[in-house]
Length: 179
Image (cartoon, rainbow, N blue to C red; front, side, top):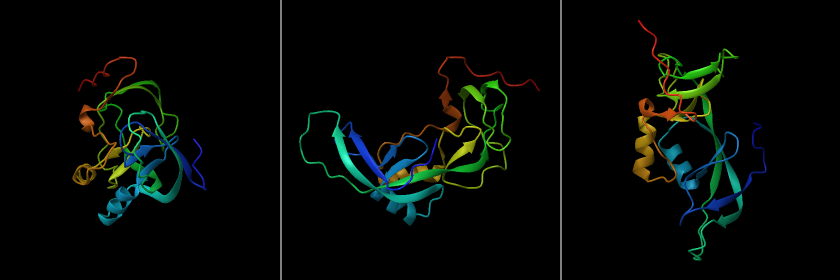
């Protein structure tokens, strides 16, 4: 995917009563509310790059129930960093259809994942990041989770890494190697 370049303009879809604090964009970027951005910086969390202001040009209400005026917060575009942490395909019980083609990103044909475990010594301390070998997923620290819950940020769902499952074809977990 190509990066989003300035000028940063966006149209939002409103599915509830209020706009969210954390919104997925096409590609690898996210929109964060000004409230989120200020708190993230104040608490010196790490792992998000950018914080470029975004002009919201339109908000489409997807439910016609409420016609009250909507306060649109200021938003910033951020990119979660690609961390040095490496997802362990064996301990993740990943079903892999093709071996990694790149030794750096460890991009591979992953068909199913049952849990996320990082190889020891590969994580460099970011609070939010994309791990090598599973770049499509965002991992966060317990510190980030507590931060988000304490501030009541919206549109975030946290799954403990050992309970994470992505298995669109219902293949089940790969067997663990015998010792």
